[in-house]
Length: 87
Image (cartoon, rainbow, N blue to C red; front, side, top):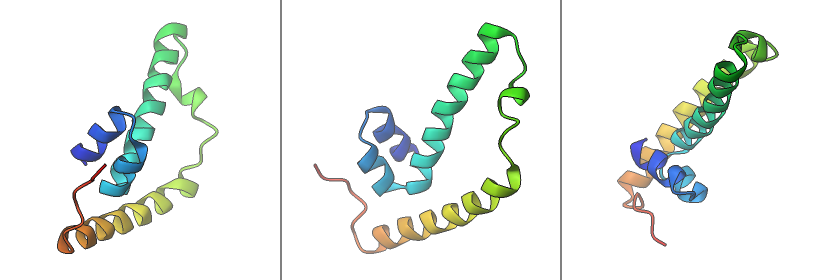
């Protein structure tokens, strides 16, 4: 996941997603969390009101399923020697 975050931070989203798809998704969530925290810090409003539109039952199960598939992908590319990103 750290390699995926590193590729994401450098702006190479394709490499980030290829190396570890869940790492790319988590990096995207961290970007969203940064802006949420900045909003909260600047306005003083609680973040739960900003995020109240999100229903947990609609995104927790798909995220868990995606995480399992992402680790399956990582195991596949590692066992087949495809785990290095080449430009």
